[in-house]
Each structure stands twice: as C-alpha cells, then as structure tokens.
Image (cartoon, rainbow, N blue to C red; front, side):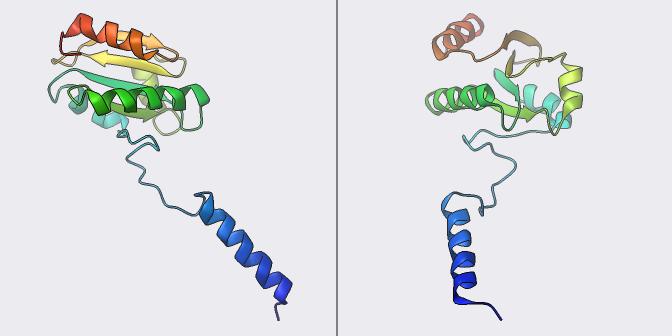
Length: 140
C-alpha cells in the first residue's frame, strides 16, 4: 500500500518531468530548433533537389552544434530559399566518413547540381555565413 508521501513524490516527479520537457516525445525528423534532420542515405537526394543547400553535420548534445543550429534556424526563417538539413554523428557516422567531416559542427554548402562548394568547421557566424552564401548566389 502506498503512503500519501509516496504518492505525493510520484506526482511531484511526474509534474517535474513534464514541466521540463522530459516527458515530451519529440519528432526525430526535426531538431529542437526546427530544422529538418535527414539520414545519410537521403543526403544525395536532398542536395540535388534544386537550389542551394546546406547540411549541418553535428551532434545532438554538442553545445556549439546547438548554437549553429540556432543561427541556421533564424537565418532560414528569413531566407527560405536556402535549404538546410542536419545530420547527427550519433545516428549516421557513415555520412561523416563519406564527406570527410572530422570535427563538429561542420557546414557543407552544395550548389544546385549537388556539388560541394563551401565548407566551414565550427560555428559560422551569421554575417560570415551570409557573405559566403552571396559568393554562390546574390539571393542571400
């Protein structure tokens, strides 16, 4: 038989988990910042689907990666013509090997034909990202 104290602690713990988001189920196909997450096998179709695309190679719990995803999310909200997706090393290490990405965060930018045109390792400050993208297209 449970005591009142035991029930109170159970309810308190459940409320705490829900309040902090630990009880929420999150869509695994979208980052917490709202960017799409793709698989290693989807990279080729993503970068050849048209337009300039950027893939963020990072980790789910990496602080600089989270910061970079925030920068990308705020930028793409204003510039939807840039197609952005993320690949997590914890889930798809083969993609990191294929593209020779040895450090995170890393951003690879692809032209409309799917060719890699730009690469940045580390957090790409928004102003530098914009300047680099403008070398590929005046639309940014």
